[in-house]
Amino acid sequence: MPVREVESAHRQESFPRDESVRSADFRGSLLIELDSVTDRLDLEKIFGRNAPLHVDLGCGDGSFLCALAERMPEKNFLGIERLLGRIRSAARKAATVGNVRLLRMESSYAVRYLLPAGSVETFYLLFPNPWPKRRHWRRRIVTGEFLRAISQALAENGRFLIATDHFDYFEKIEEIARANPDFTMASPRAGDLPLTKFQQQFRAQGAVIHWLELRKVSPVR
Image 1: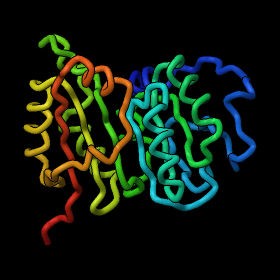
Image 2 (image 1 turned 120 degrees about the vertical axis):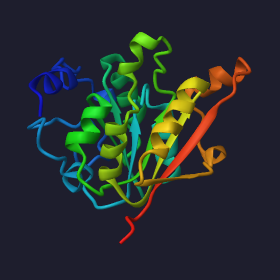
Image 3 (image 1 turned 60 degrees about the vertical axis):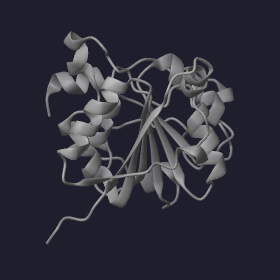
């Protein structure tokens, strides 16, 4: 595991000890404090129970994450976000939602190194930065390597739901997905999901939203 990757994924910054981001309903801490950035997460300890896990990659201010978690209290929800300001906002929203936990970390790092194999029922990657300039394409989160890590973390028949308003990026994601035999493309049930802030903005602008659902398939034996 490259040292530089560890350092960039997990930069320590103080988080305010604000009671508004805590809840007596939680069995554990709302904000996951890592003892190690190389050990896999102990999800039962973190959530205080065993339940299907949904992961929001780049959860932003937590609006989508918390709305979905309230609809499905029987499932565990993990929001992963790198930016401190956004994780603070997400923590305030999640303070009264007992099945949500938050991790301040680069999403790609968390998927590759922290989530246990086969532990995730559904991943959400909603409106990731498209990095439209060619010289910035290497910064895009969806790569062949990233999809392989997603596959490893997904349970059998698990889902990976992706949304973007950027058609060129959408086509590239489709191309990468087709090259991965671990996935089949399915028709996404996006209408059942809460709206994200970005989705509301894009709708107001009349932009087309492109959805893709990847479903993990069992290997042919």
